[in-house]
Image (cartoon, rainbow, N blue to C red):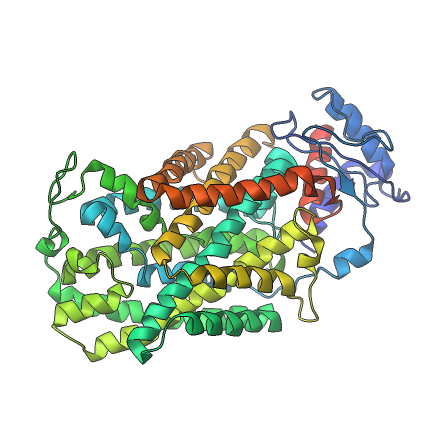
Length: 547
């Protein structure tokens, strides 16, 4: 198992206790965001009561709050309670091991995002013009590159299905883990709804059928495939993504002969401050275009969610994450330059099918290439729709298994798929897709994403400073400078959504607040001891105590 090496290292460092296997003990753990050690050691059947006492003495030196509360004393304030569960609890919540290597992970990372190359990015042209969108894309590409290098380190250190939740849990304790995990959940639950709207637009232009029937059909079909089994789902996802990438190549080749720099600057100049042909909506347009520049890369950070289903997570997760990001960066820059440069930026401002629109504009009408990109381009939207459903199910699985969300959501079937974690967000997403407002749904997804980016980059910096001796099979180039750049840009991105439609972002913030209230008033008192994320927190705290 992926936990084997940390446990082996732990036992080697505590030789005198190697053979000790004490009975289980009931514990109540307390933790607060920003506590001195930022995580608490756990007392469970693996470590025995000696570790509880030992860790208590260690942490008391820097934190007056003990790990283990007196029996029967309820936790108060910012504290959380952990409950011990039997082995059958985890047997009912197992994922399929070894289903993916690094090549499949690259495909998964590209699949998460490739729909953003087909639709959604062009709404940024309406906010910032081509120049504003181009600058916003450069800024967000920098943020995502720095973030992916940072997440590659974190995922090699803490390879669990919790992804960002697990990273923040190790750095900031349960509160930090919950805040990060639920922000990611908002991103992944809403993004498929936006993609479903774009799928409907593509189907409308292809077959004359769109709307709720298409949304419902796609949700049912692809959730059912995931329920059948992850190995089959990932392989199918890889094939669909490869086909979608081929269609992007055809589009780029077809548009190059029609490229003209003047086409990039054909949006009428407004009276905004700093307005020019390059920035027709002024300086503020760069900021307003950021949420749609993010759409070129949104969800690539979900690769670590496949950790518990990866053959060699410490090696394969960094490769998959960085490889996927480099592919996506190349596609984003080429499409942003060649598409508007061949068709004219002004013609793509509000299109739900911008690549086909660009080909029709460049060639003066429908062509076989437009038909091919439209048909095969549907595969790109499907790839992201399909893969983000996978991502939200794994995030819910990890949060539910640890007790942050209702525990029933993490139960798996015979194919090791979390059925309810697939179905319930699908129902919510289908309901949201009925609004037909893909551009506004993007804003909600981006809000959740950027909040999680701030917290994950803060976790990287915190662990580098406070846990310098943690095992890091992969190390981020540039260290905390790299994650610091991503952190600053993520903070800018959080604010950018308010410039487009503050009502939508405030609505997303209210949803986030409701989830936080659920944790504050209920689930923090019903967390589960012994989950992989909690085990890693315990091991690392115990190892720190040895030094």
